[in-house]
Length: 184
Image (cartoon, rainbow, N blue to C red; front, side, top):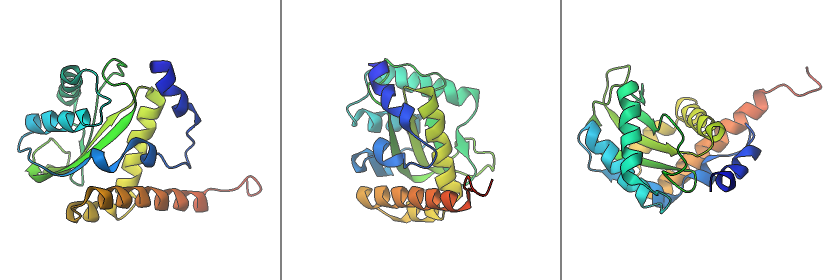
């Protein structure tokens, strides 16, 4: 399973869209009822279970809790990138990302001290894909104007389209600013 699921991740380049292959509208919840850090982790694992890829929900939740005890995955700007500390292929059978917005802010340990409402759960077998997905989400959230839209849109398909369009715009911007071989 691990070899089969990580084979495709070896072909990702920095300039290829990543979100369309890992995130689907059915993996987006715009009204997560969580009110605490613990309930957010529980509800995000439940959302992940809806993908049909989670093999051991209890172990996934425990690994997320272990990672949060080490250091919060919340970042300034009101979002968190939930992920396990270690890649354990028995937790899920394919790589995916889920996204949810809580109804109210949760004090999740963000460095800016502000509450968190946007949660991404990154589940990847391959460490390279895992790191690439985390970096890509940070790039999209910090280098585009997508965050305010993520607070207002209600339809999962609109949220998906907004995220994937923001990723494409950021990638296009990187292509334009990257020197060509002739310029170097």
